[in-house]
Amino acid sequence: MSVTAKQTYRAKVKLEVFYTGGATALSPDGQHLACACGDEVKVVTLASGTIVHTLPGDSEPVTALAYSAKGDRLFTTSRSLLQRSWDVATGRSLRSWKGHLAPVVGLSADDSGALLASCSADRSVRVWDTAGGFCTHVFTGHKGVVFTVLFQPGQLTVMSGGDDGEVRVWDLVTKSCIHVLQGHLSAVTSLSLATDGWTVVSGSRDRTARVWDLRSGTAIATVPVHEAVEGVLALPAGALFPAAKAGKKAVNFVTAGERGRLRAWRSDTGRCLYEQAEHPGGLPAGGELTWAALLPGGSGVVAATGDCRFQLFHPQKAGEEAGPPLALVRQLVGNNDEVTDIRFVGPLEAPTHLAVTTNSPAIRLFDTDALGCTLSLEGHSGIVLGMDVLEQPPVSASGAPHGTLLLTGSKDNTMRLWQLPGGRCLGIGEGHIASVSAVALSRRGPKFAVSGGADKLLKVWDLPGALLEGGGGDGPAAMRVTAAVAAHDKDINAIAVAPNDAFVASASQDRTAKVWRLPALSLVATLRGHKRGVWDVAFSPVDQAVATASGDKTVRLWSLADGSCLRTLEGHTASALRCAFLSAGTQLLSAGADGLVKLWGVRTGECLSTFDEHEGKVWA
Image 1 (cartoon, rainbow, N blue to C red):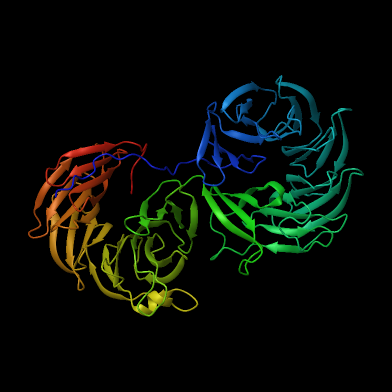
Image 2 (cartoon, one colour):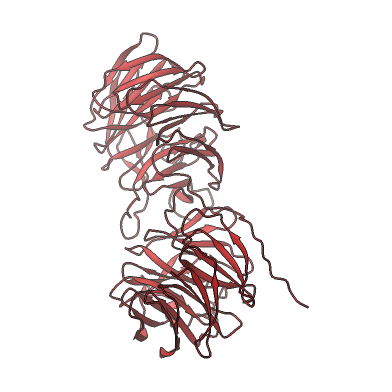
């Protein structure tokens, strides 16, 4: 019985950019995030990062966002000084207005939703009637940029913190400043009210947090937090850390800042109640926390990082295994930058995760259902350029857990072997003298790994059982080279291992691909014919054939028997960057710098379908 190969596909889920840094707001019900994405605002679900609404911009970057207390309105402002009110349910613009003389930095809505306060680089705080879009109050007095503004619930007062280190309290009835809270030595970046409504916590870049009494306008406590603070959250009584109850006049609060770690403090003693564990290998670039918000009822914390990730933390539940009081349960990646490689992880018939590398030293795993980030592998000190995956039985013959093996190569001149789903690094391969741009694992069980890179060398590495079952004890084990050869005249771009583990193919910028016999790396064939560098190579799963993708815009099929070109597939209008066999070797998929993915019939060489969902180069 013949089987007809599938020829049409549609996008199931998309990993899209929804946050490019800057303004962020959490909906009052904790279900959605509003995120600045260039000049647009993306509203996404906190559970999965799915985009619900895209609010169009005015060609200028978004600078501030705020939800109304009921969550039915979203207020936005951009560098053009235009402020807008949006209907959250429909994504429709309700009203717009201007008033400030410089970009707005912060927004805050009052409990009724009738008033909106804005603070600006023009050193002023303004209050607006949201229904009419007109200004009701203008407050001046700060000596620099005003970073944050906050209404006091149940009172006609507004608080603001600025670059001058002052916190000011403004009375809407008398239209005057009733308190100037001085003490900070640098910019006040965040304000948070305690549940009593009269105690406010301020966070500053002077590496302290201060607690103030709004009735008297005096300082209650000063807590050194030893980092520039970008977000401070006053906790409701018993929230997150029920065992650490504060006194009557004390408040527990959480800080987020330049160290990239959440920390909880008690104001009356200045004691640190909780500190998130340090990042392995130190704080990565973009790991600092730039914003934080408390989930409804103090049920958790969501924080934003400098590299556009959102981290969701929940307190440990009773009965769970011993661990940190706050556990990272989910990450949303707002901007992956340029994706350089992708691999499915899990059973071939139903993969559960997608491993993604970008212009970053980290490898991220996303679940295939909603593309939420479940794990981030950190260890490389340079951008990860390539990876390969090998599925294993759940347990080895000795009963030790196996899982999936993930091999990565990096600009730090090393490759690393990881065990999934735990994310443990089992081994490190050192020996290349330039970037490792291509890696591959044996296909019939974990026997060996192959690497190649900018040093033009092709190397085979041993994968002994001791390495796979435990690494180097307390840390990754050193991987051992069993064969090496100077393979090409220019950088090696890609490597592929044959399904029977007998051959390995390498593709190079020198316009050739070569086939080598394992394990000694003896040359079998040199595939010549491409007019530009060869970006990718793949073995057919059923035939004695190899496919290559090249910068000359073509994909070629080659015979392993004599190295002759069997077929040239033309159709891309720019470099062909990737190729892969599918449908039991009867079809070939190619991706190019023209943003197109093309499906080819291997026997006929005919282009069966073209997919144009991408807007830029398709690297993987």
